[in-house]
Length: 406
Image (cartoon, rainbow, N blue to C red; front, top):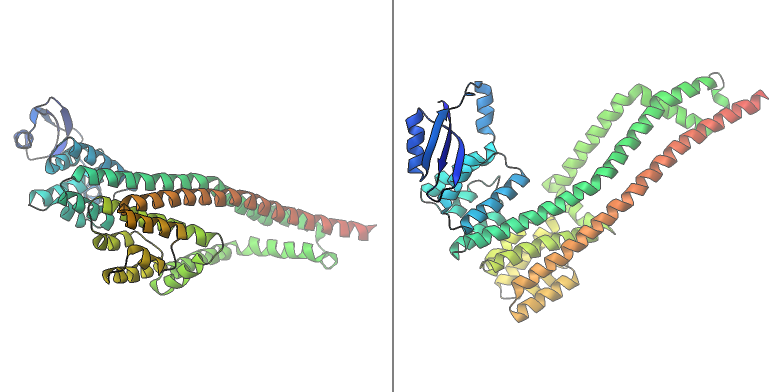
């Protein structure tokens, strides 16, 4: 079908424009009128010839990036706050979003909503895009008649996650550059520089110091078998990824990571922040504690936390308080447990959980920044020691040869 460019206005005077595939010009005009718009013009787009292969990839592109989901949630919340019906808001995204994958997603959601399903059920059918936390937050806000509040809280949650993610990426850029430079420098030195220098030692290899012999052997191996080293590194990375992510090994490694001196404390605080933040937001939106616990648990990634939260949920069903059940898990920090206890006693559990999340989010961010800042001098020192060691070993060899010559 041909592609038409259109421009229309609402009864309030707001202008909309976009593109739509229809059989002819009159179908576009009828679609605009049926959608509640006042048509201004509709004309066939000049760039309608595309290969079947590109059309296939265009239609099948359904993945949504984290930034696109954040933008969609923010704009959706704004439209709902403006008292715009959900189907009308989705129709705007379907027709006018600048991202094709967002338009496809919105069209799928609109189809579900127009067929009589509520928004949360439509979101649930796209599990690859919307997490259980997102779906249940919307479901709870729909039940309370405050969809705009739930979407606004979801936007705040996604924005906070984006800030944390951007901070981590920004902090890791320089250390990663240092790592790449260190590996490249060592490779160049061992592959090109050392072989040229060792030509001076030909015929006198047995007279060289042990340090010089070791450097020459390593240089010869790197020069001759660099491809094997790359294969071993790739195999090591793939094997490590399998061992760390496979269900059979994940529980073992998760337990070991929590026992590490600095990393373990960082992981506990990070998981605590995610769990309490999710649970607090759900409770604020009217979700009962028993229903909110499995949703908040789904946001966790450490298998030890997941297992202990599952046991805590069973104890909570038996009548124990949230403080008691989480205390029995022996994972959460004592400050978090005491604040949860105070929240239960004062009837302000949701706000106290959010406060716990804020505290440990800040502590996690600060701890990660300290680790990254410590990583930089470690890489610099490592590079200096390695290059310095190579230079010293070569100099020792040259000195030993000169001593024999004199």
